[in-house]
Image (tube, rainbow, N blue to C red; front, side):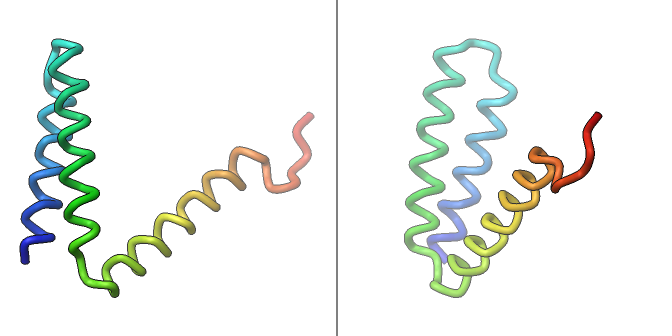
Length: 75
């Protein structure tokens, strides 16, 4: 349960950082949000970590394949 709270705090901090106009506050909020997300992810159950990792790898693979053109002819 604590991992869910930390993940939600991290996501909330990221949304706060995106809405902030001042650069130093945005950077500080992003750093704090990253710390909370990493901390929450470390405390999360193994099944959640594996699911998140599989989704991340598949997402990165499809984005990279789209950027490379997947062997399509680009004239």
